[in-house]
Length: 237
Image (cartoon, rainbow, N blue to C red; front, side):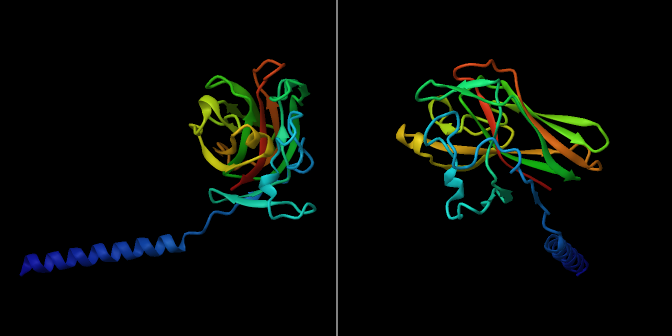
C-alpha cells in the first residue's frame, strides 16, 4: 500500500510540474521585433536591376504591394521591412551576362538603429561566387558610447551567391539559413532560381544603445566577377 501511495504521489507531482511548465510557456512573452528603415541608404530599389543586368532585381519580394507602398514580409518568423537593396563591393564588379563593368560603392554608412538590441537579423546575399570563408565585407556597429563591433560577411558562412546554380546549387550557409527562395527574370532565363539568407547576430553588449551601422566591402579585388554582398532588410530584437 505504501508503495502505491508513493507512486501516486510521485505521479501527481510530475503532473503538477508539467502543468506549471505548460502554463509558464503559455505566459512567456513573444519576442518583440523592430524593423530598420533602410530607405535613405539603399543603393537600388527592389525593382532596379543590380550590376547592370536587366531583370536581375528583387521585385518578386514586392508581389502584392502597391508601387507607392513599402513591402513588409515575415521570413522564418522575423518581420522585415523591404525598402530596397544596400549593395557594396570593391569599387567595380561586372554584369554576368554581358561582362559590362559595374561600379559599386565601397561602403554605405549611417544606417540608423537608435536603440538597444539583443539580436540583429540580416536578410542578405551576394553576387558572384567566392572561395569558402572569403571575407566579402562587414557590418560595423557603432554604439552611442563611441565603441564599436564588427560583424563579418563571409562566403559560405553568412552569404552565398543569390543565384542558385553551379557548385552552390541547393547549398545554404553554415551560420544561418536560407530564408527566401524565388525568381527573377534574368535568373529564370538561365534556368536558375534565386535565394536570400538569414543571419542572426547576438549583440555582446545588449545594455548599450546601437546608434548606427555601416556596411563596408571586404578583401576581394576590384574587377570583373568581383563579389558584391548586399543587404535587403534588417530587423532587431
